[in-house]
Length: 205
Image (cartoon, rainbow, N blue to C red; front, side):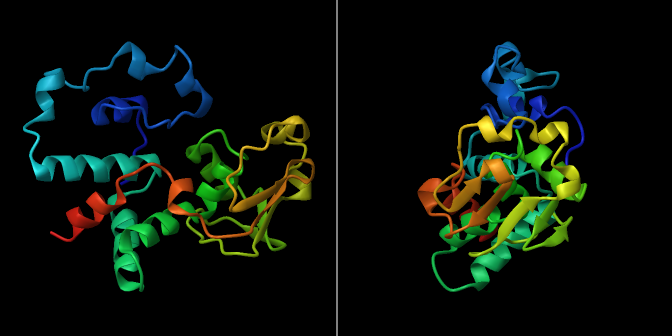
């Protein structure tokens, strides 16, 4: 199941910032800075022995939590990447990055992936002129995503025209028109910093 509890505990469990709460993670309010120990009764002792399996598991869990996916969803991306021709780890990352909710986050339309998922789930966006409500939808080159006319005055998109474009090269944004277009597939250097190869090895055991 997808985590619905305090997300700051997830950063503490993985012993690193996962940036699950957007800009708050860059402030002194970040719980990871105030409570760096692993959550639970025994704190750091609960980390267990750092075997190869342990390290692979933690890489997998951290990546899964960064993208906000449950185990079944995450493993499905591994199976699809393994089925397609090419480098499995690169394809795996591309599949994760080209989810609609992630593309919305990358384009700067959401402060976090969780907020981007909410924007999609609430039907505030259109993909190629059609209403989209499925966060896991895979975007492809040529897809144009825009905020619905009925949602342009939402506080979520207030002041967008004055914002700085932070989108990666594979997305072309038009903040004034509240839209962006997929112009290429994301390269590995543009993807989230996860150890995709280690995750592939974990599932290949």
